[in-house]
Amino acid sequence: MNTQPSPQRALRGHRPHRPTPRAATSAEAVARLAGRLTERDRWLARMLYEHKVLTTGQITQLAWPSARSANLRLLRLHQWRVVDRFQPFVTYGSAPMHYVLDVAGAAVIARQDGLEPRDLDYRHDRALGLAHSLRLAHTVATNTFFTTLVQRSRHSDSDGRLTAWWSEARCRGFFGDIVRPDAYGRWREKGAEFEWFLEYDWGTERPADLVGGKLPGYAQLAATSGITTPVLFWTPTARREERVRRALDVAAAQLEEPSLIPVATTCTDVVPGEECADPSVRRWLPLSAPASNPGRRLCLQELPTAWPAPSATALSPVAPRPASEDPEELEGISGPPRPPSPQPPGTPTGRRPR
Image (cartoon, rainbow, N blue to C red; front, top):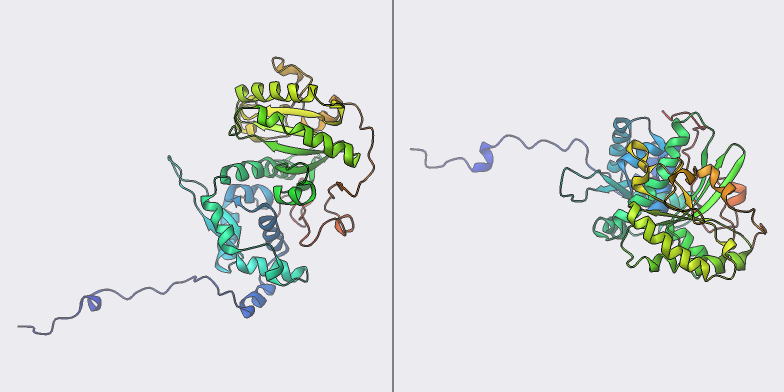
């Protein structure tokens, strides 16, 4: 009889070694990243710092030729703690992986701008806390608006190009005492530029009068700065768009100078198929046009023709005009870290990065 049986752990096979443990975040580990990170990696870190969270699909739209190549690189960046990730729960199927900035990525950004990591407005627990935020879906939807424009400029034969994309946090830093748009963008096509503030309506502000109540703030901003900037409202459904337009009509009628606030609206389901999320197609309806006439809807580049020319274009220290990706324009307009270019580095319009 065996009086000394082998312990249970001895009957198991050897425990496999973790092939890809996540790197530590020591100064030595961050220094080793200098020989590993490409310009596109560093750009992605800045995009995550600026816009908080991006899904795998959005990152692919921005800078990679396929989801597979994006996933392979994101796996490396996750191991090096440049990015972190989470996957929200959905009732049916599975949600895409959501990526946020990790501590090593924040350290790289800070050192590039001559800052101490502690000087950044960044905390790892706060970044991962977006997984439980009630504004996660709204943030992802707002970012989809712009990543779709970037994808269009990368894969389309047209010369359209997104030249500026400011996050809600950056807009709040400049205009937060007057208005708080969800984002700011600038689109260049056929030698002309069009800029706008975005209000992404998720249908949660009820009644719709709350949406219309935002117009006086934009009117005050335009009157104070001397810059007429259109405001685009994106709604989830056609019924919601009708309600929002009625509220905007009432609010605009009460303004002293309604022409200071050019407004256009759209909804997700006005364009069927794969282009339902594309802001550049014929979907925008200026506030003066009837919602019952879909033929009046305009493309993004056609919107400036729907309104009279701005009466003033002078810059103002109260509300500075957001700059493009030109480093000389960015200098002095915002504190570091500067807003990243919406386009990945080294990828001219119409060419895919490798």
